[in-house]
Length: 453
Image (tube, rainbow, N blue to C red):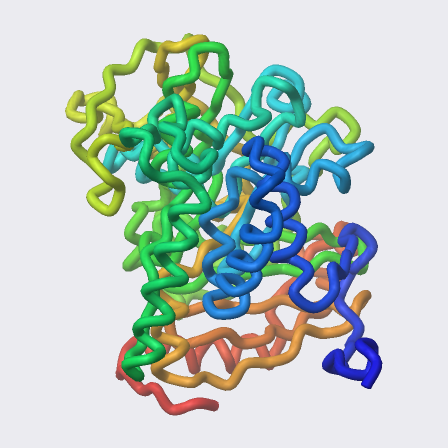
């Protein structure tokens, strides 16, 4: 039959607020073909185009996760799609984004080559690497083709010429051929096989951190489930609201002590307290109005840049030769800022030197708000427990979700007409459905009841 008839018919459904998202179909096996053609050109091996296309198509069809190996190449591989843009970033699927425009400043767009978001472990564990969730690159000659210094992405038989060099016997094609051969042998033996994948947190981060002309910022703006409060709230944009990802500051069981994204530590009122007292940690409190046109961001620097000492004893999952770690053994790492914030430090790599700098962040009272929320531990629990997951509501509806290790549940919202926060301000308050769900979640945490409902 004709090729069009053989293609699977995909089910289409409306997506919420799709105006800022552009979908581009490359067709069946088109991603492998596109990467193969572009990587053959970029590595200077056009004579290997057919082989690279075939091997990448096999890799992406067999292990779709394999595409994470090529994150650093996206700005060059997809360069033809980036006309009219100033920056690009790779990202992950296991996250929820808040309002990114409230977390990036115009100064960062203009002055930095790369901006990556951390969730505070740069301070607690000294980890300095580009995060797979967000690493925004300026579209410029300074950031183009940095990844060629990594052997597993370089031309065949080349050393990579940088931090990823390994003796000249490897290269992109060699790496793919090994994976393909091992997969073929495993299939013949009837064995399961999952190849090793190189992470952007390894070689590429080291390449960036040893490029003396780059200006890089490691900004503390992300929330991750393994250090977050027990409940994280996601507000969808619409109806005059902006999107938000937030949790209560200093709440019981909060592994961050309310400070991973620079929020002042505040005591959390008892859940049995009246709603008026719980307003200090109201997940639906209106955020400080961001001056979007100015793009000021939600963080302000405090004090001067302070030189930072680095070492290579952290991030055990990264090969030792690629590790870059901040020396956080000093008292400064555990001191609270003048605003009472814990872990309120950002890190910089500027012209070959490392620095740290205090910051203060603007959040709604009693809340920590992040640019992104990363599922790392909870998603595994979701697979084991099989929670009932609700569909995302259509555009324009008032909607929010509460995320916990038990799963996520939709929250019904209604305008807080006549409330103390003021009608018409975009504020929202708990309704009966929310109160019921909130009580259910507390019972789950108390009793360990995993039954859906």
